[in-house]
Amino acid sequence: MRRIATSLGTIAAAGMIALAAPCSAQAADGTLIINGIPYDEPSGCNDVSAYPGAFAVHNGTDETAFVYSGPACTGPLSRVVPAGSASGAYGRSVYIR
Image (cartoon, rainbow, N blue to C red; front, side, top):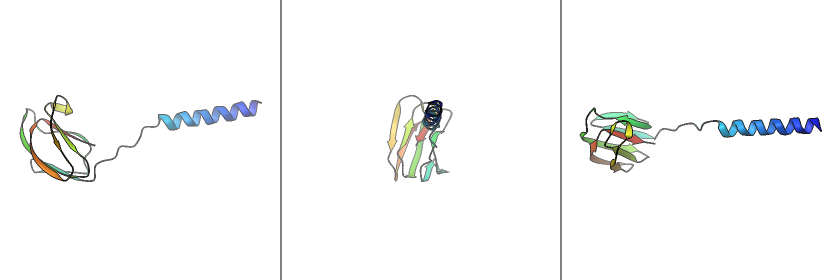
């Protein structure tokens, strides 16, 4: 009986560790170009400027880019730039998965 309890406890602990392990982050494939500056294999938030302003986004990745009016990808969403497209944008930061 003790062996069964020990085995079940070990299996339960292994399962909890597997579920608690963070998933690995994966960058977008391709290059995101913001105002002529290339970001290869980008992921996460990229601050563009200290103040809101107009800038160019060329999304040469396989993911959608989201332009936010605030720093650190906060504030209202001001533009969505689909994968493989380019657009003028107004804001302070760009997020890509």
